[in-house]
Amino acid sequence: MAMMRCDFFSETLGLSTSMTVILPQATTRQIGMTGGERAGTPVLYLLHGLSDDDTIWARRTSIERYAAPLGLAVVMPQVHQSFYSDEVHGLPFWTFLTEELPTLVSQFFNVSTRREDTFVAGLSMGGYGAMKWALREPWRFGAAASLSGAVALSHPSEQAERNDPQFAALMRRVFGDEPTDGTANDVLHLMRSADPENLPPLYVACGTDDFLYQSNLALIEAAAANNVPLTTCLGPGDHDWDYWDQQIQDVLMWLPRDMG
Image 1 (cartoon, rainbow, N blue to C red):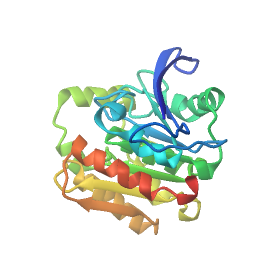
Image 2: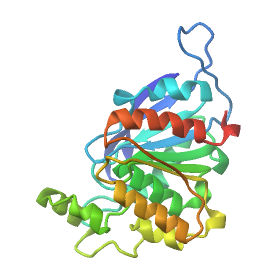
Image 3: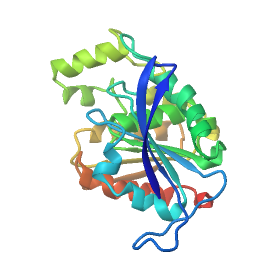
C-alpha cells in the first residue's frame, strides 16, 4: 500500500486543504502485508469525526493494513467541524464533499467512478456525513456505513447529551437558528422519506455504552418504518477507538465482495 497526504486547492472552499489517501500496491516481498491492485480501483470515502481531521483514521487504526488485501483505495478528506454541510455562517463543505472532491479524486488517482466500486463510511460526525451522503445521493454508492453516528441531531435524546454552549454555537454556525427537522440535513427525515428500492446497502453500528446509542436506535426505527433494509451491529462498546478499530474491519468485510 501507498499512503500520502495530498495538499491541494479547493475552488469550492476558496482555500488550500488536504486529504489522506491510501492506494493499493501489488507487492511480493513486503513482510507481513498482502496487497493487490487493478485498473479502476474501488474507493472508500472514510469520514472523520467532530474533533479530528483527515489523518485520524490512519493514526488511530490499522486502516492501511486492513484495506491492503482488498485492493481498496481509501480517501479521507478534511472538513473540520462542518458536519459535512454547507455552513450557514461558514464554508460550503457539502458542495466540496459531493461535487468537487470526487472529481479531484478521479483526476488525481486511478480509481473507479462506478457506483458498485464506490463506498462511504464514517464515525460520529462522519457517520452522520456518510448516511446523509448515501441517502441524498444513493446513485453514487455501492454501500454506506455509519459507526457511532451522530445521526439524529434534532432528536431529544441526542440534544440532552449536548448541554454545551460551545456545541450550541457550533450548531448555529453550521445550520443556522432554524431546526434541522424535516430538512436535507435531517438524517432521520431522509431515512423516512427515502425510496428503499434506490438505496445502496446500509450498515449502522453503535456501542450500547455510547452516548449516541439512543440516536442510532431512532435511525434503525426510521429505517424499519420505511422498510429500508439495514445491517445493524449493536453490542458492547463506547464512543472510542477500541470500538471503531474493530468495527471498520467488520465494515470492510461487509462491503460487496466483487470489490476485490
